[in-house]
Length: 240
Image: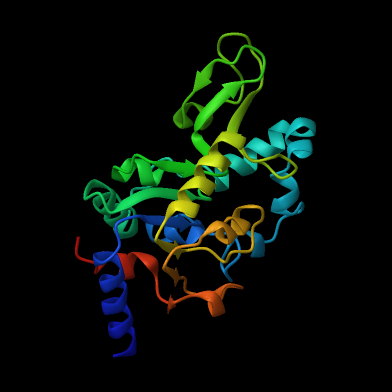
């Protein structure tokens, strides 16, 4: 009954606010079959000879591109994944004029696949890949079988933010502006452990902060509404 009451409160907040922004992480895509990073079954708890944080670093990519791509293809290229109830509901809210922006830490492109248009991808996207030599563009499916440019033979780099790299300034600025202008901020599917992304919540000055995540986060005590359930299940029950 307590969870039902919380869903009703979330519905009320969505109904009574017109400038909603969603901030999400890996937990948004787990219901699409994409593993997250920090949960018990997450990527960072699996055993590798080299830690995933090291493999996914800029210096490792430059030094051992073949090893990087072996891991990247195995764990970071969910080309066949489909949007789940959370992605679809957020797209509906945007189409209805309620949701103004999505700020995501995910690189899977599932928000756009569901129909969302105003998406700030803080950590880039697997769907954008560029030759480091001639800058030719390649899609995600090309990366499944090659890491070399078919035009000049140069190494292709995914347009994803690796460890040791900075966030895109234009994307970061757009995300900050959206969060600062929001009257309702819904945060979902993120442990809020990755910085600088998690630090963007400090720019929110609106009416209500909603946190939807299966596990605890450092911001739980700051939330006006805290729902610890799968986000697809929660958002899927919302009426637009």
